[in-house]
Image (tube, rainbow, N blue to C red; front, side):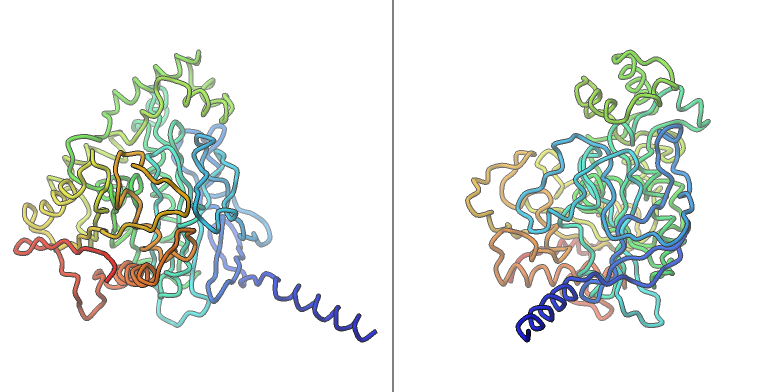
Length: 455
């Protein structure tokens, strides 16, 4: 009998140990939400920030989220944006099972990581925009976790956006319908997500007047679009564009007329000739038709006259972009075709020398990650070896603990330093913190690039 009681106590203890702790309800636009608490961090996954962009809302600016009754339990990642089916299977991560295996058009849900215990002071906010060449990606990627940032006194939010044919398609009928061009729905989604943060983040303990946007690759390129857009005025105060924002002669935005012609030709190639048919086709069928067409992956940001009034490079060189705090950088062997050490250097030089604006903080991430056990790692998809595109992500998010690579003590130390640099920049506009430090800014007199590596 005593053995039975002891066994029951052990069973109840194990159940209790595995029980989920939920946050108190938080009121946001649309209704009440609850997240979970893990190791002192409140985590909210899948908060709707806009209405599902489906049916008649396909290829329209995001609309306000539909109100819900009761309290929405936000403890699982929502579907990632609809994309190529075999594109979202990251290897080498211990937490890949946390990802949502599904993708779909109904994808406009964001995530929040916030400290469980907050003082009276409003916390700085960081808004993450993922990369993926404008055609793949999602907020649930294993490395994009905000728990380390929350533990360092910053609230992190990750926002999704429509991809590919759903996020960037332009068409003469869509331009006529809107009255101000078409395309750039992805950038509109990002703007809507940041606006939601500005309007709702106080409920989580955040400061709506201290928002930093940061993103990598296509996320960084998106940030270049956002800072050049007249619609971004007043939405955020700092930006960290990683491996994307630059002054380049390639990778330019499409003119609206060219993007409209692409959209029209694509739909005509699959026998669709009007807007009603365009919106009636099933989303998965549309994605497959796009992938199998000669137009994949040609849709990207365009000069629509509304979100973007001019080509990003022209706006950048002329100084027609937000005059805010910037930290910008690249990896040592980043995308050879983009030549980021030179093209990001041009961006920094333009900022401080040609335009005479405030200093910026420029970095080069120089540390090669340890190789995956048993992997024969060759050149990446951009033809680079060494410290390749995206190599900095596990470190600046402080998530080397989740990698299956044989990380050493120095990897953990570098990750701790980098996550501190990123959160310090969000807090103070200076990666060193309020009292200065070894990372010197890029100025007209001293064009410093800080090399991030193990010590």
